[in-house]
Image 1 (cartoon, one colour):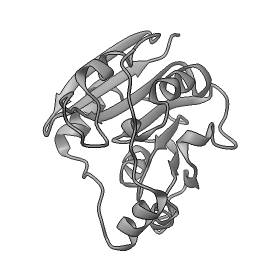
Image 2 (spheres, helix red, strand yellow):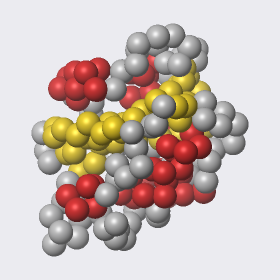
Image 3 (cartoon, helix red, strand yellow):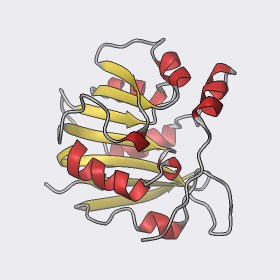
Amino acid sequence: MASLTPSRPSVETWNAQVRDGGTFRQITDTELTRFIDHCLIPGSGQIAVDAGCGTGGFSRQLHRYGYDVIGLDYAEAAITAARRTPLPGVRYLHHDLNAGDPPGLPPRGIDLVVCRLVLPFLTHPYEWVGRVRDHWLRPGGRLYLLIPVVDEHESRPGGMTQEQIVSLPHGWASTARYALAGSLACLVLRSPA
């Protein structure tokens, strides 16, 4: 497995960015189209977790698709901003993904976990991906990962090399991988049934 040394901005930095009106990467029509094609599970009463939800943009999109949503973020300012647009069936929790499972998460009761642009910032990203598969997702559930691809000589935080990304699907039933504009890799991992 390829090693990864995460470097993430402090919670104070993220809070300041949100308070100063900083934005997170916008959701494009292309991303949504590909998400629908590869990841959307039809039906009602399904639960999605938006891990690293920021101000809640993708959480609200998941709600439009019919999911009950739990948005998680470790920046309190982001959670506060997300809660300014309340929706029934969407709740936001202040939680650091490096601190283990969030309280109240139903064991093996989640249908979909979305993790956009967050995985490279985690202290143990491969272990977290395995934990989602083995403890969060229902059999056949999906993990949607959006990861900036960086060159192995690049020192920019928040990205992963091709070698590091290739190691992520180990132990999953199936994997779909595609590229999005701006050197972004998208992986949709399905847990064993």
